[in-house]
Length: 411
Ligand SMILES: Cc1ncc(COP(=O)(O)O)c(C=O)c1O
Image (cartoon, rainbow, N blue to C red; front, side, top):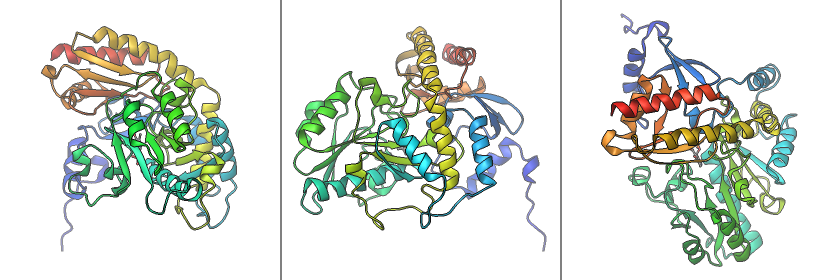
């Protein structure tokens, strides 16, 4: 029997590899046509050796750039020693990770998980348990209030309270117990909260929605309202947190301390999936052995990399860079308003840029940027999201803005 002819991996071109994916990979993504083979810092290189400036940074999973030396070193050292125990046993890396992450975020306790969606699911379970055990909500009556246009992940429960039909259609029946109110609307939130409310769950800045920043005072209002009504404030900082906005957490821009924080993405240093629910002892303390868990959550490799991430954030350098270079990004985008950009929202090194729809869809603009050697991604319609590694230099940032200007100029 003759073996099927398959081009050896090493000699496959980008086009070969894109074609090869089609029959064997589920079509739940529509990637831009670039096949990344290696990366360092803010730059990635494709199979043919073409270099691209990464202005997406894995949706903030690569806040410290690709293969940050301190993170790679921590991972290598841990790979040589111990990688996985499961939580059936203790491991010698987890205590330090939890101590330092709690300290960094001003909270008491950590529930380590892996992906962002798992952290959200875990936060929902903790809030429901807290509602029954502490608040005294009758069994199975707990509600959680969320915002329209949210993005918290892709599990069945999470898409149950999405307002994006593409994320929901065909995936019912959905999990009950959620109330959706408009984002940035305190009156609507107040009307939705009642004695059954376990928590208000929001993103301090809505990333997938197009980097939507609420009015000054909204987060403070959510904090006051949840205090007053006796329910939890859960902030999903999976994309907004860990330096992206110029602070460790986006809620810090209003000096607000939620009861529960959801972290992920950058917590894994772009190396391993690491997420966490971080919160007060009287909240996370409701969990008892056997009630929740994950085989991989808190594994020693994740804890070692996560600790190295916290160590980088403890220096304040990345938050400072995001704030300083965020001003460069904002000024550069302001210069493009009226020249193809119809509006933008930015905080730190994070921007949602609304392109004049007459110039093309967000995807077409992203394709144009790819041709200019810049990786970025559209969100909805004609909005492009920019979220470079926080290690980007001013010159690189200016060159990316120049590429955007050229693409818009050609429209
Ligand atoms: C705010 C927010 N929450 C949760 C998630 C889900 O994270 P993951 O894709 O790791 O499950 C995301 C991912 O984009 C996110 O932006």
